[in-house]
Amino acid sequence: TKFKMKFSHWAYLAISAGITSACPFANSGGEMPQNHPEIEPRRRLGLRSLRGNLAGQEKVASTVRERVERSLQDGGGCFTKTTYEEIIEDIRAIFDTLSVVVTDRERGHFFGGIVRLAAHDFMDYDKNDRDFPQGPDGCIDWNTGAGETGADNAGLETIWCDDPLLCPLKTLYDSKYGNNGIGRADFWVVAANAVIKLSSVEWTDTEGENTYPNLDLPFRYGRVDFDGCEGISASRLPGAQGCDQVEKTFITQMDLDWTDAVALLGAHSLGYGHHDNSGHDGMWMDNEPETIIFNKRYYEEILRRAWRLRDPEDTTPTLDLDKHLDAPKQDWTWAGPNGGNPRFMLNADICLAFDIEAGGNCCTRIRDQADELGEAFCVDPRLNLTPTDIAALDGTIRECPSSAAVRPRAREAVDNFAVGTGRGNADVNGPFYEAFSAAWQRATERGYSEGQLHDLANTCDVTTQPTANPTVSPTDAPTSTPTVSPTGRPTGECEDFNGTFKDNNDRDRQCSWVISGDRNRCREFAYLCPVTCDQCQCLLTNHVCETDDDCCSAQCIGEVGNKKCECRGKNQLCTHSDQCCSGECRSDGTCSGNRNRHRTHQHTTAAAEM
Image (cartoon, rainbow, N blue to C red; front, side):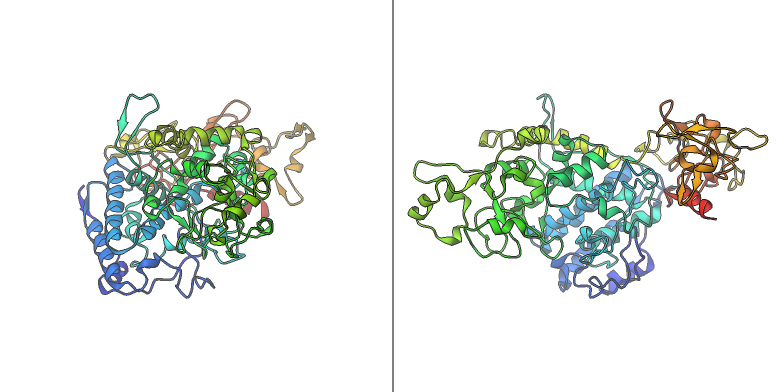
C-alpha cells in the first residue's frame, strides 16, 4: 500500500521553527545519555559547522523535510530494494546540501562519522563471549566523557543526536524509517553503504573484465536492535596504540583475518581526527577534498610518506623525538602543521606496514636524492635546518623496519591495496575495493547465523520472506496474536540426567554442578539438566541442543556436537513468541524486528538468580 511518511510532531515543529532544544535522552543503545557531564552544555552535539549557522541549519532541515515527505512504496517493516535505494538518495541529498553550507573538512567528518558509527557498532563483536557477543545490534555506549566506559565513542554524538537541526542523519531515521519498522542496526549499515557508494570512484575488477561506476556493497537485513551495552561494548573496540589492538578486535574477537583488518582500516581515508574526540588531530589524507573520497590513497600515504613520531599535546618542533614515545596520545606525522590541519597516522595504521614495536624512534622512509639527504624528509620543516645541519643527521635517524617479518599478511595486504605508488597505478582500486567489500560483509553480519539475515525483498509481502525451518505455512498464520506455549521437548515427566557427564574439560560432573556458587552453566548443559535449569518445556536461544524438538524456536542449528538453539529473525514464520529473537510473534505469524536480541539470556540469568 502506498503511503506517505511524516515527521513526528516534535521533530517537525522543531525544524520548522528553528528550535534547537532536544527531547530527553535515553541511557544507552541508539540514544545518548541524559545529563552527561560533557555533552550537557551541547557544545559537542551535532555537526560543528552548523552550530550557530542558522542559514545552514535551515537549508539542511529543508532538505531533510523534503526527503521525509517523499512517498515510499514499502510498508509493514520489511526491507525492500526500493527502501535501500531511497536511503542512499536521502543521504546523497543531505550531503549535497552540506556542500553548500559547510567545508570539505566538515563534509569529510559527516561521511567518515557515518562509517565510524556503523563500525563501532560491529567492532564490539566477541565470538568468545557466548552470553553477550554483541556485534551489529544498534547499540552504542554513549557515556563518552573522558575516563568513562564509552570514551572511545567520543565524537559519534556529532553524527547521531536528538537535535533535529544539527544531526540530520538521526532526524531522517526518526522521522522516516524508525517508525516504519527499520531498526537502527540495519539503518546504520545501509547509511555507511551509502557513504561508500557516494564517495567511491570508478573501478575495474582484478580480472580486468568489468568496470563499475562506484563500490556498491552487499547488504542483507534482519539485524535486531539491543539496548543496554554500556560498560561492555566500547572496551572491545581497537585502541590506537598499535597492532596488538588491531589483532585483539579484528582477529581474536571478530574472527576475521589480517587482510580483512587492513581492508577495513582503509575507511580512514574518509574524515579526520579531532583533538576533542580522540586526542588525535589531523587528516589521514593529503588535503581536505580527499577526505570525502573513498579509495586506496590511505595505503599510498602509509608507504610513500616519511612518517615521524608526534605528540599531539606538544607540537613544539624538536629533533628529540624519543620523548614522544611515552606520550599518552603519541601518533605520527609528516611535513609541518599545514596551517593547523596536520597530516597524521595512528600507531594502528603505521604498524600495518612497519614494525614500529622494534623500531622505536624511527622514520618510515629515508630516501636520499641527488641533491638532498633523505633525513631531510624526517624532520619538522619548522626547525629550518641548513644543508649542513641535515648532513650532520646522516645515520642518526633510523628507518622503521618492514612489518613483513612480524605481520606478513598485513604488509602483503598494504602493498597489494596500494598497487605501487606510481602515477600509472593511481586509479587501480580493484584489489582494495574487492577486499573491503568482502571484509565489510563479514564484519556487518557477525553474530548472526545463516537464515537470520535476508536478501532485500522486491515487495513487502511476508509470504516472500525467507525463513529457516518453517513450522507453519503463511496461509496457516493465526489471525490474532498467538498465545500457544512452547511445546518443543517431548511430553512426559521432566527429569535431570541421572548420573555423571563430561564437562568441557573432560571432567565428570553431575547436574548439581551446573548451577553452583556464582556460576550458571545452563547454556551448555540444560539439555542434560532441564529441571535444574528450569527448562523442561524447551531450551532457550543460544543453548546447546541435540534436535529441533529440544528448542523453543524449533531450530537446532550447527554441526553435530556443536549445535545450538537459534531464535528466528525478523519476518520469519512463528507460532509463539519464544521462537523469535525479538520475543514477539506478531498477529500475521511472523517475528517482529523489535528490540531485545539478548532477551533469552536475560531471562536465563534472572531465573538462575531467583
